[in-house]
Image (tube, rainbow, N blue to C red):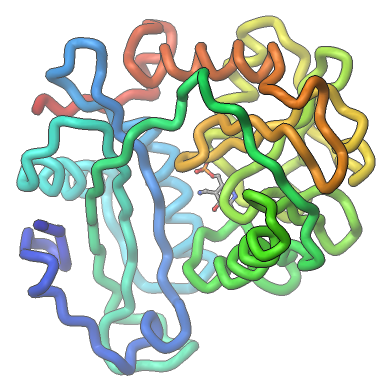
Length: 301
Ligand code: PMP
């Protein structure tokens, strides 16, 4: 498997990272997870909302005070080179990681290197899926006064890990975390939407969530479908009485939630608004809705 590391394509095994670096010892790694979808022609892979991923990558780097700069063209080129070098012609998950690769400590800011890795990953957008059973975590989501959730940093995922494994150990599929004020924040690796009386509601971006690109996508496409969308604090008990709930994120795409703790959601099957959004999202990511072409970056494969 070829990866792009520090400006060149190399075999994964050739990447040697200092065991005493801030990334290895303290989880100081900024990253983005990006989907590429094979479009309807089967000859083109489309990267989804690359500019937004690039921008969030730079924001995380800035908040963490890491010295690193990269242009949008360099960012795209490094991804495309990695895809082509591996010869992939299928749906992909691309990870761009920033590694601090020299002996250092938790407050190191220099020696940042870009690592791009690419993995085949089929889309979850399958209408036959039943939805997942979730549990509200005893762990609160990290908050902006502690570890900023709007940064996509490896060490933040310790919080996600605790919540996810707690839910799995209790027999659920996944978790929902509340923020320190007791409002719904997000899942361990995805944002959360609820539907009440045909209105989509999702926690605002200052409710201890990652500024999710898929969340923004859902808000835009829902509004274009004439659905009302409200961003506001969401109470825990709204999860129990709402009509539909779903996760949204790059990996999760749109994942219906059919249970929260002991409460069944709606008819305990993916609801109609979730399914409408899922179909529309699928069309957009396969390049079948010309209105959203500006979200897609093409690579001929
Ligand atoms: N929240 C968390 C904690 C995540 O890890 C992710 C996945 N990146 C998301 C939300 C969804 O963000 P995005 O839609 O940008 O992938």
